Length: 193
Image 1 (cartoon, rainbow, N blue to C red):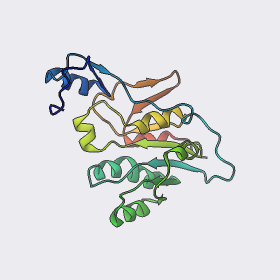
Image 2: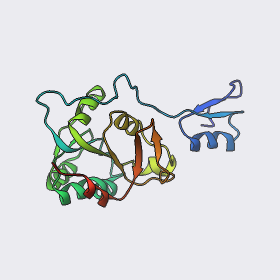
Image 3: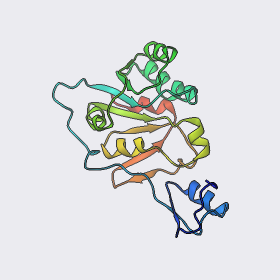
């Protein structure tokens, strides 16, 4: 952050309180404003499932990465899906063969990359999604969820999140949808069809 000379600017728009505080603490700008990410509600809104869409219990859209959240994915995605025998699918990239094998052992179907514009239809065809932040992101940027949280909630799908700092306070989105951080056992409360 320090490599940019911001002295001629009135302020910085930071996408979270922790970043705004860093700019201020390091005296990199005169003012820092928090400007949270948000979903484009022209696209991300409740939809009816497309005709003939494959229905399921749980969908997760996210990349496996470089073992930066393997433990969390096991605890908050693979373990609950296997224990509850949910019908679950995963979309994303950077899944090594070992990750694909772990998904299959837990009963999740791996479907690969999906265009972001297709996410609302996918959410509509499922009953719940999960938020599993990457460990470096959760540690370096506490309290800042990824854009996918806002997109999912704008679509009206219930979202269960792995804990991240400062998320114990529910973040209300609009009037009805809230991000509620809870333990993986809370998936037991999802009614089965």
